[in-house]
Length: 289
Image 1: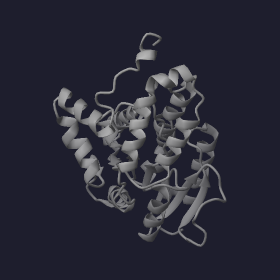
Image 2: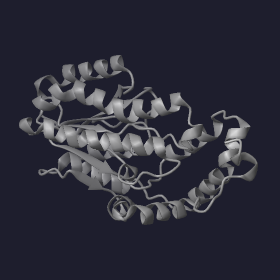
Image 3: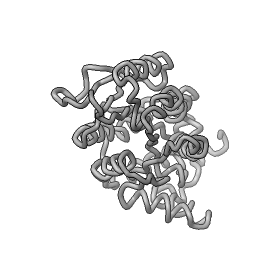
Image 4: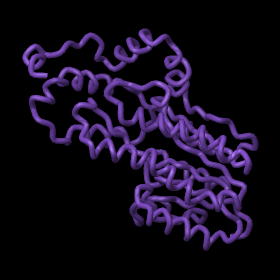
């Protein structure tokens, strides 16, 4: 492979991951495109992309992927790890099953940590960097988005901790903060929330809220992935790495402006935006709840 710089990117099969992998390959990187199932990726004929089986929740899968990269790269190491794999679990916390909450953290928190720990020898060898893909909800927790909000807050905290721990090796650690982007991940999350079996009497508690949330979601206008792809590329290529990279106006508004408002104002604004402000408990369920 000569002296071609290399990147490991998780969650490459779809969403932000696919265009990010293609963009980095076009910029001259060898991209190890991590995905849980091979043979379903859109990378046929792209010379610089190496599809690699990688399930961030499976320690054996992570170890095997890193071992393959080490064999192919020799002493060149990696120039970046981009922790992009993620899932969204949403809905009222009262109704979210424990295993779904655990899945949220298994993919969004423990997965990136597992990948980083395994890849650090390669990153040290390659004078590399770590790029985590976060979310505005790390700064602005939202009702009915408790699982994703808390998992991304944890990832942002771990990013800051790693930045300090790896400073002695001059290994930058940063986070890319997308806004509401036009990917299938939000549709999958909504579909999953609808199919989770919940006792009717419990679901009735939140029927008005869930209907309002669906109406609010229908009005949203997601941004194209282009801005997030550019932000990832900047995080990978900038000589002086910033602590954070924001993609699009809504990421900055949510992360920097709304999050800094006084708590009552902020929470009222969020409830209004979600369409749930002023909703009262149903009379027929209030006593049972």
